[in-house]
Structure formats: C-alpha cells, structure tokens
Image (tube, rainbow, N blue to C red):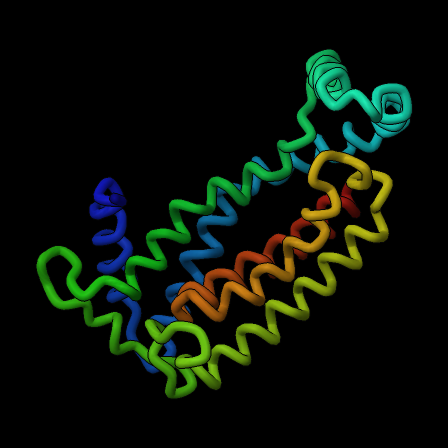
Length: 218
C-alpha cells in the first residue's frame, strides 16, 4: 500500500545507521524530526499569519453565524465567500500537521518492518531505557510512560496557549475538536511503536515552542 515510500524508508534507515553510541537511534529520531519541522517552518509562519487574519475576521464570522446559524448550507457558502474575499483559509493551520504524515509513516515503517532493502531490519533491536523502540503500547513500558507523560505536559501547555488566544481560534469549524487534539497524542502512544512516540513527543514540543515564539513575534 505504501510501496512508494520504500526508497525514503531505506534512505532513512541508512542515515540512522550513521549514528553510533548507546543513544544513537533515539538521537537520530529526534534529529530527523527536528529537520522535518525546520523544513516545514515556512508553512508554520504562513499558518500564524492565517491565524491573525482569522482573528481579524472573527466579528464578521460571528455575524454570519448569528444570521445564518440555522441554515448550514448558506452559512458554509457565506464562510467560503468570506475566505475568498479575505484571501485566507480557516484550515491553513492544519497544513504543517498534514504534511508530516509521510514522515511519520516512514518512522512507523522503520520500526515495524522485518526487512528493509532486502536485509534484516537491525533497528528492531534498538533500545532506550532497556525498551525496544519497536515495542507497541504498554509492551514498551517503562519508556511508554515517559513518552506519554512528556506528551501530556506538552498537550497541557498547548491547550493553555489556545485558551489564552481563544479569540483567534474559537467558534470556527472544528475549533472545539482542535483544542483537544493535543491530548490525542497521549492515546497514540498505546498503539504506535516507541520510536514513533519519540517522534510525536519531539514534534509536538516543537509545535508548542514554535507557536509561542511566532505569537510573541506578531
């Protein structure tokens, strides 16, 4: 199904093997994640500008909701028209997250595939805190608890940040769901390999810090 990722998976596999030492694999995952987020930073800056544009449009959005709240089709049409006229999108902030999916899939395959490039996958034997990085969920304890705790802390700070800037994000389609989305990463640790959990922890921490810095600079 994801055969088109075979080449990047094999390339990532050899890059990780370039690291040596007891923490080499975990460190490689962190550095891989940071490189991905650095490459996506221009999109994050665009998302921050879009957020400020949405904040400026909130009075008009609320007026449309009050006027057409019972007519969902008319409301959707008017919201689309407003976005086109203002040159912004209510969903531009989702782009950095969506574009990470291929990289997350690569990380997932690196620690779930028995063979890569026709050879046995030696990464399946990599460990951190005595836990295989390919172990799923509770089978990866105690590492899973460390990752889950880190994700919970980051999610808490992310939700607090959203609450402080609610005027820019409230009452838009899916706004309430987006507020709770950070806590979904904690649940994800129960089903993904620990290597993918490290990826999630690194990328969500980056997101929280990036948002705070971009907001401060606005």
